[in-house]
Length: 258
Ligand code: CO8
Image (cartoon, rainbow, N blue to C red; front, top):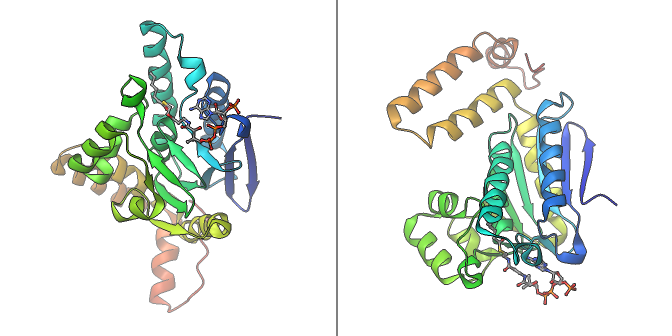
């Protein structure tokens, strides 16, 4: 059985991390499978939105501690560099990625969720960056993404204490967009995906790109990215269709993704 499962239906791909015996902890095998899955999805013209989740009671309970215990400094750095490449590819995927956090999202698991564009959580989800208690820093982007998402003070507290928070607190601080009853999580993720699919996909992808690029730069550069994307949309058939539907007072729109 593969450690990463991939299912595709109606332009939505669901990637499920599947190593339940270790609460989906990320070892080299899982990381490699995740890397391959997202590389393929980026190119897959049948897929417009990706949902990422985990099998069983965990999203991802972190990087595999047993595998990391004997690592040298050089091996530790290489592991961190690789994971960051994989997570950056998820973050920069040409299409939106929704994390459906079904359980533990600890250490590398919280970092993986943060590399996704939108996070929604089961009421059973738990979040933490417990690395300093293991004698290491967060190494898969936690020190960079957590302050950008929840603010510096909250990120400092969570990372320096390693404190675990529940889904309600995660929602309160903006780490997740909403909390769902456990059995409604995947339906809610699919509904969210369908709300993206209802729109013009070139515009959706360009908007994602502008947000990703723009939040990493100064406002002048950010609005320049936006102007480029905005202009590009006027070369698409979907712009004509979207605006014609409004002018003609039509509810139904026929976006073609071109
Ligand atoms: N690594 C390896 N195995 C794990 C991990 C993990 N992160 N998490 C759980 N497991 C395994 C357990 O060892 C156990 O295996 P076994 O049955 O063979 O003993 C199995 O999963 C089930 O776990 P538990 O029996 O512990 O289940 P509990 O319900 O009692 O506890 C917890 C669940 C609270 C989630 C607990 O398993 C736990 O605390 N796990 C570790 C959480 C953690 O500290 N995660 C952070 C890891 S460090 C990290 O992610 C850093 C990323 C950056 C690295 C940068 C390197 C450069």
